Length: 42
Image 1 (tube, helix red, strand yellow):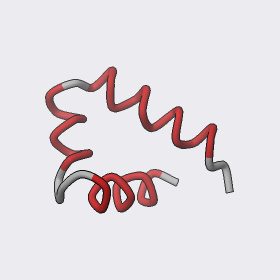
Image 2 (spheres, one colour):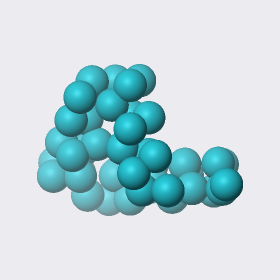
Image 3 (cartoon, helix red, strand yellow):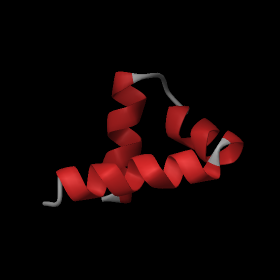
Image 4 (cartoon, one colour):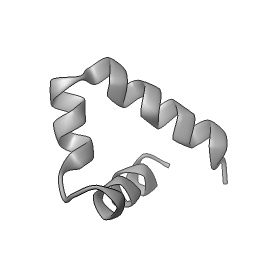
């Protein structure tokens, strides 16, 4: 699920968005990842 989140955000925003968010705003990254996981639990 983590890898899907990374790939999706790279497509929606820009290459490296998730990595940059994780570095600059770890809490925001965790919140977005949790929301993605809850919404798209495959």
